[in-house]
Length: 220
Image 1 (cartoon, rainbow, N blue to C red):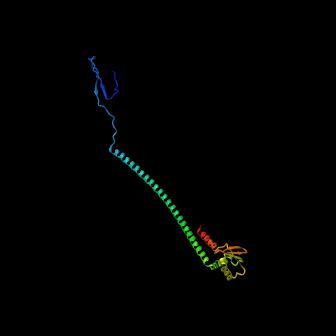
Image 2: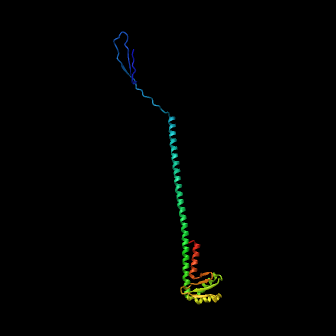
């Protein structure tokens, strides 16, 4: 007895063995067709499929939520940076405006002082040229600064000789003070010489002192 294993399970051949008394007769192999078999595919029931779909939808929702939160976070950070930058620019602008305001105020005040002194200088020189007697006020101002110091000599322009002499006489100093008419001096100039030095009581000198005082006060 012999047998053979078919390599292809889709077709199985059957042998029929000869019966007794008929040894020479043989029946050749007759193929018997068998239906081909296919591997069974696993199937999912409705509950399992619904569970997987639900898990997938939940995962998608979580991804969307994470992306949304990340976008909101980045948007807030960007907005915060923009606000900070805008605040810094505004602070810088305000500082510049305050500095500009202060500078403009100082410049305006300085201009006012210069204009006032220019007007005063013009008026005083005009009065001194028109009325030599007006120099007596300058003489009294110089005497107040000297505070009764011993005056040896007073130098004045020739046009102011008599007015200065009269002012010194009224102050009780004329006999002891030598009055000198100096052609180098201009109207409004007057120099007091003492044992401790010389005092320039001229109009222009006093105006310059006033101007320096205003400049120091304004920080110029």
